Image 1 (tube, helix red, strand yellow):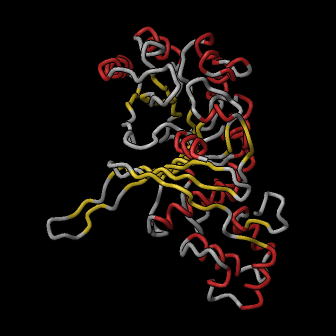
Image 2 (cartoon, rainbow, N blue to C red):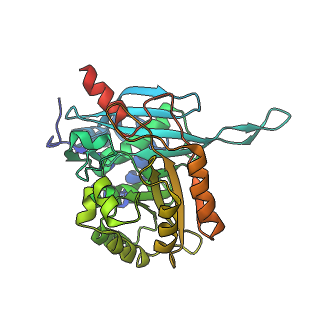
Image 3 (tube, one colour):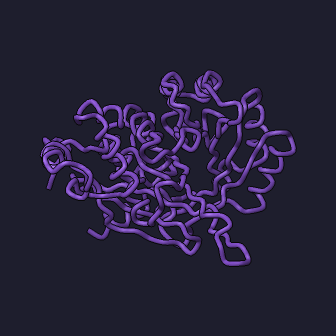
Length: 361
């Protein structure tokens, strides 16, 4: 079995510009990118327009197949949850979410193609330790490399025959804390955005964080142009520390201050994710505090149903309570949506598919 210290480098770790400095003549980097991200090849020998000597040279120095699909579950709603195995034997999850199905004209021609969002992981396990999160059970194991993050999208597109010119939305909201692995996450974002590769524009990429204030500032300084989402989940420090111990280091006010300094496109808003847990944070008193907290921030609130899993004491909120919470915010001028729950007939909770697999071993 290979490991992370293998002398061969993952070619998916590099931007096209970086490859053009490593591969000569430099125009070959664009061809390699096309084979990787347009045709989804897994072997340098399949790159037919490259000279044989170059293919052999690339095969000696680089590797392509750094993840493999070991399990997937498909929901009735079209969502597919993937479990990927890394070269060191660890596993991570990603989810392909079907946001809108393909639509047809009366004559049978395609009116609109499917719209997808892919939720990807950036770490094996997580350091944050949120009390409601199944991923937290395993603790932190390792950071993913940029290539391992990129490969999740490449394999999902390949597995579903999604053409290179089809655009996806990406959310860094799987396993791990993206800002705790900022260098690799930023590099993967640049690779995704390359017009000669996947061409997934920064405005289609959302980085979700539990609120590492100093890293939010650093992310803004990188100028990636990505969207920012904050996993807030509580409106006072006492409750947030119970749900998210990281709040002791990065309290709510520090997060709000960092968000106010974050560069936001004129057409965009900062997303605040609010996981609603029955009888914990679902009352209108919390809604009122949330409204006050976000005053002056160009924001959108995304209310999320808690997905129960075995062993948790937390419960899914009532639909009427979710709607009351949303209505209060909306009626007071705050843009608020309820995220449609997907994959409830499969391992919906983040980390659940991986946890199930580990229990089977």
